[in-house]
Length: 435
Image (cartoon, rainbow, N blue to C red):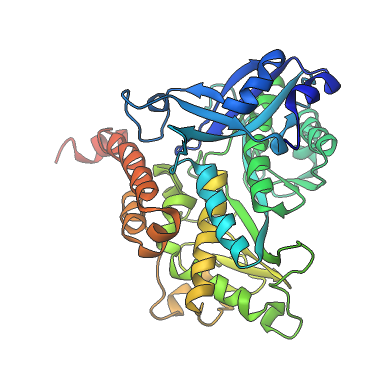
């Protein structure tokens, strides 16, 4: 055993561990384990009833065990006596196929067979709002174009700086934070890494931001579109493929178009090919489609895609190539499950490489004002139901992620759609009551 958690507990003077996992809804679940019990938990895992979470199980199913990955250990920056661990889910001696972390690890294993490893970075956007959720937390944050507003950023310095200090202490190498394009919205960036590391950190980051916002009397939300008139929360992913040592970027080709290799374009071709189906993973809520199909916001732009296109250093496209050796996927939103973001990207990219998929010609148009000039361009789904239907029917993703895992995801998310359909909105009543 490479890392003995019982020894770590003694060395770091930890009292408790949170053994956690993320379900198909992206909800972070955990058990709090006293340090004296962590040795046994490291071997057998912490027990859960899978039906009590969103994992497409029944009350008759066996106990589910979250076996902690010691490599994922994070000591809570705001409470040095507690360690957080990402867990891998097992039931009846087998890994749970529909567990999001397991879905990602299977894609990583497939890439490793080819001698590849995917590295990614994510740009996490969130709002700081009032505890009751009715408005942003800073009543003075009123500019029509508030992006990069120094005054608004520094009014939230206490919470923002504590999050940054946490990442610095954890060795994540955060490098910039800003007030984003919406009032009350912020973005924080840290250094890219192997995709499993990025996914684990992404999960913990969301927990940390929410916990520290609450500590400072606010509430943090990663909801895709919490305010109809403001820019939504995106989660842009920067993607590159490396050799098995992690030393050589296989997407980098100084002689290639925009500095990308042919391998990179085939990978991108896979993402383009499966884009509509990937929306079910990358835009996983009913609310998500108010972000990617949004009208112009008060700032003048949504910064969100609505079509399956890619371009150079052009933020109006679904995929942007901002620099050599990587591309940026701008499709995913703040509600994305961190593991399924990475799993979907890698599954589609590996398919693109295997099938030699061509992403087509890049576009240099401003898609917000000139998108109508592109003939035959594919549009992104208009709602969650359409995306789930595309996802469920995708041969590429069913084969890559596993048919039962895809079916479980569709089943669980359709419950969300059905709940939405049972809801009668004030808009519907006002428009229809006198018809």
